[in-house]
Length: 296
Image (cartoon, rainbow, N blue to C red; front, side, top):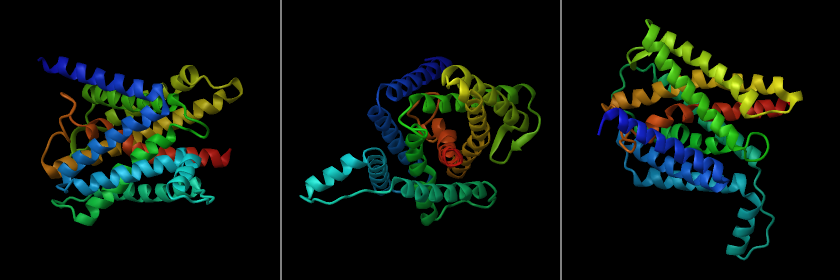
């Protein structure tokens, strides 16, 4: 099969699956990203040469538990009481849990940024592997599900809007970089990325953010200016953090000596190759929403 056709078909299937699961229900959205998480863990373990059973078990337990606690707190409490024949008032402070998880994830993401500048690393210690597994892989998937709720109820437009911004940034960073790119951004990790492409991606992402807030989200008139500011800010975050996420995964692949994280998507690589920008962006966007909610 022609390589371009193969990429087109697998890309279309990926986008269709994403849209259907996000739009159909909260449960299908959680389920899809739970599956994506397990695949991402499998691919990450291959990159860093980590035995897979324990990481997969950790990922499943953490994702499932936090999802149940965060979004089905009352149901989870009643289930625990019924299973153990208890009559306790179990109420978990979700906000405090979010803060703890966010701090862990942001600290690890900061470690990932520093990791980009380590020139002589050929192997990664076991403790660091598990640290990256928790903060760089598992928790960002948790935050992907959390940011879809914004500051109210589940809103599929938020997560779809985020993916549109990521795709816009990636696409135009490539187009601008290929067309007029001269200055290398981080040549020792990703030789094809350029400074011109980096800023081109951000500019077009900001334009997309404006269009999303204006015509897709359809905010109330009194909040339209605020909505534009929010989505253009998210676009800038996506442009900067998404690029760092792409570079981080490239660094792991460079150490592993492979081109792609996996082969589940013909012509595109693995799930980590498709979601490397999103998983780095998600905790930062969640922090942005928390600040926005606090200020409001």
